[in-house]
Length: 196
Image 1 (cartoon, helix red, strand yellow):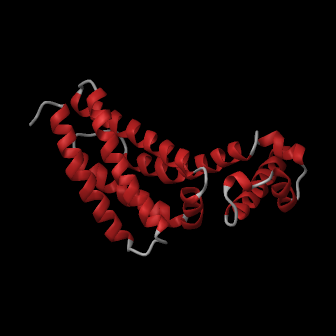
Image 2: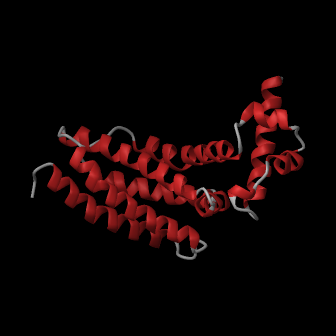
Image 3: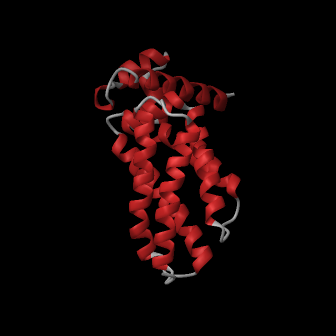
């Protein structure tokens, strides 16, 4: 029973936080106001979160799990056919973004968004490096350095789409991100695995 109550309190706190994030930058959101909106006391807040930044991190983590881990899980084990993996991953990530449009826009547009996109970049780099190692068996240091540019560029395209209010169709965004990633990833894979 207490577990359910705690889950309910966390849900209410997170909803209140998202409500505040709609109108305020992260550094202007107060714990007092979150607790008032969530109808919980401050001790309940502190039993679950250290501060608003920790709350932001936990809300972001839930979003990452939905956006990224779900997409990766559906891809399965690494295989040498990176084209199929990248197309499917981009499609799944774009559609997962659309399922959580408002939250995604708030997280990307928040005062704290630099750490949000950096964390997402790190997750993407870890994933692509793991797949590179499974395929090539080579040292991933150069691949990871060069792939930072590729993944960073893809994240900029994704972020601009979100900041622009999702005006372009998901199919157009999928196509643009995929073409960008495909062209640059092929170059990076070939250079780092010694196939020029």
